[in-house]
Length: 124
Figure 1 (cartoon, rainbow, N blue to C red):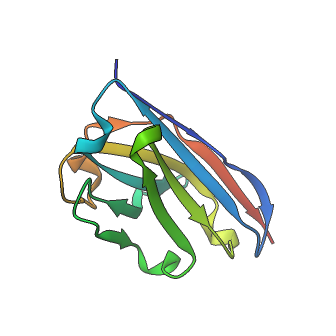
Figure 2 (cartoon, rainbow, N blue to C red; figure 1 turned 90 degrees about the vertical axis):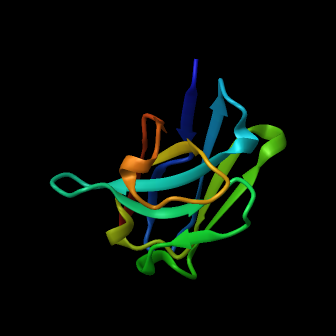
């Protein structure tokens, strides 16, 4: 059974940091591109950061560039999203997603597997 399980969300003050983790199971993690998405009520889910399985490239949406970093530890079947200098507008449910690909994708419908999400709340 394929599973993606996020953790690390929580409540933090403006300027603080969080590190989200996504642990994968049930598939060959090394072969999969991973994306972090977020969603707030009433809005579409947006890609925050995405990375391919081997190409070494990463995508960051403009609003998080320079503050967020995606990384993966294939030995632990885990992808991370380090979030620094958090802002209230980063408040959302964050999801990780996976698709079998060497290259990254940034569109929600390109991904086959999704986690249940973890809430991030940044207070002002």
